[in-house]
Every structure is written in structure tokens, then in C-alpha cells.
Length: 400
Image (cartoon, rainbow, N blue to C red; front, side, top):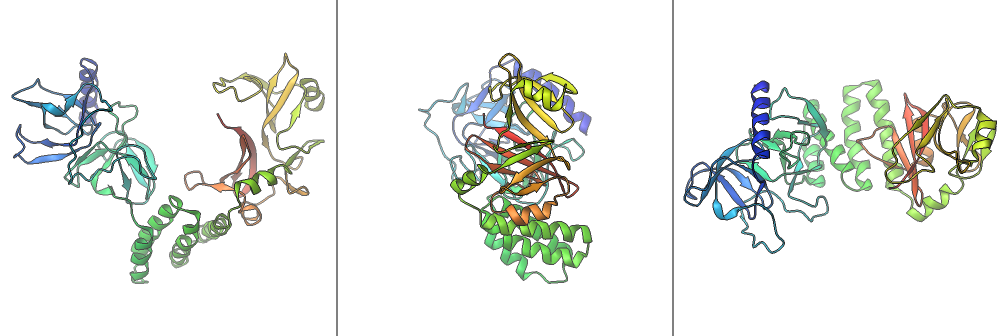
């Protein structure tokens, strides 16, 4: 089956390049026959791209949708380009949401389940391209009626970008309070079902406001204690501490004021600025010749130079002509430390939980990047990484 879809996708790719790209300039449906009284396979939203399979026949085109469904659409809705002056015909029964809400700018729906695997092809055995979470918005231009059909959730025909999941796993955005009530109604002994629902609650909380994390993790913690996995219990307790800190998140101006006190201990050199600078001559005097020099493309022009020096504990952007060096990343150790709050020296003995409990109100976090945190500055941010429960590195990341 996988081979079949690969051959089909390759054929369609060739077909696409042999003709003009076509779009639908209104909502419509994919009919099984060239007449509106026929049954239909799915819904198209304005802007959906289609591939033409046949020429115009009595006001109808046979087309292929972005999930490989084939059927008919009225000729009047086929266009080679979209225009701001298009007069859109809206289908009140079309379940696809229009862009412009608080979550997504284009046609979309939302993930309804925890840890949804988006695949490269409409095949359960194809490569997993991404794992999506409950409440994530996904681009949808064509939606099949059949719940067991595949949906292209990247809105793109190009194989490099296309991603697929089953229709039954996406829909309108779940309601957080409803999920809480659903969980609370479950039999306390229905551990598997409680785990499934609590995982959805946690993921949706991360896709909502920080204030929802505490009640989400409280439910999840109930289940984790029932499962009685020590590692999972410890991880959940850490996330509960994170949720508590994020719920009392500082204002941006408070965080920026806090960052002005940040510094580093870099071997024998103590800096009192958030972004350590040296001259190139000082750099060589303090740390000697680097282990290696590498040129890295810097399209945004964020760093002093595209030349980077690499030391065991440091990554540094160096402009040799201007005799300037800028520390970009520090790998912490007993002699290379991240200084927070003037006298708090963090090194590779600093635990993730201790860091969260002390600085949770200042950091940003994401479920999609576990054990990685950031602290914002005016034109950059600190990216703080933990490995195996201990502080590993601090990177100064500039906004493009």
C-alpha cells in the first residue's frame, strides 16, 4: 500500500508541473458525479488547491483533492489565481473553519487527541513527520466526509510539506472546561480512560493560558499516582512546579529588568552583563586558540560575524577584522557558570526542579520543547537547556 501511494504521489507531482495550478474561488464540495444532486466525498474551502484530471465537460471539471480523493466540481469555481475581489459562495454546512481567529490565519481545524502522529503519506505505515498535540491548529483546505479517510493537514500538494492524519482526529477546538468535567465524571478505577483524557487536558492547557496548567496537571497527577511509575511521578511533580510558576508569570518589563543583573563566570573571567563581549585579542589571551573555526550563514545579520570559534565550553562569534568577539553559547561546568540574581551561580550541578521552583515566574516554556526554557530580553533571549535533570547549556539567541 505504501508503494502504491508513493507511485501515485510521484505521478501527481509530474501532472502538477505539466499544467497551471488551480484553486477554488469559493466553498464547494467534491461530488461523485458532475451534478449537484449527486452524493459528495468532502468539502472544499475557498483557496483550496486542486489538480485537474479532465478538461471542462458541460460546466464541470474532474479534479483531485490534496488527499488524493477524486471527484467533480463546478467549472465556475475553478481559477488559476485568487483575487481579493472574489465573490465567495459559502457553504453553511462546511465544517472547515476560516482563518482569522485567535489560533490560525488560514483555513483550519484542531487536533482532538493527544500525541497525534502526522504522516508523510496517507498510510498508517508511512514516515511520521511530526507529533501534534490536543488543540494544535492544522491547515485544512479539503475535508472528507468519511471519518476513516485521510486529511492533508498542511494544506499543500508538495510532497516535501504534505502531512496526513485521519479525519476522525481533527475538528473544532476542544473546550478545556468540558474536558475537566468529562474527566471528573469518570470512574476512578478506569485508569486507562482517565489517562487518555488527562493527557488531552494537559496538552490543551499548554495550548491555552498558563493559568490552565495547574488544574490540568492536578488531574494528570491523580492518574500518575495510580499508575505508580516513580519516574513519571517525579516528572509530573516537576511539571506541577513549572505550572505553579508560569501561573504567576512576571510582566515583560519585570523580566527585562531582572535580566540586566544576569552574568556569567567563564573560567577565570566573571562578566556582569547579560551578553559577554571581548576583543579577539582578549579572547585568545584568556582561552587560547579555538578547537575549530567554522563559518555559518547568518542571513539575518544577527551576530558580529559569520565566523564562529568553538571551545569546549564556549561558542563565540568573532569579527577578526574589527577585533571583536561575542559569546553566543555557554556549556556550563564547575568553572563555567550562569549567574542569576547577582549571587546565584548555576552550573552543571543545578537541578531542573530547583531552577523551576526558584525562577519559574520568569521563564517561558513549551510542551513541544521539554527541558528547554527561555528568559526574554529586549532584543534577544536566553535559551536554557537541561539534560538528565541538570543544567547543560545557556544560549543567547537574537531575534531575526
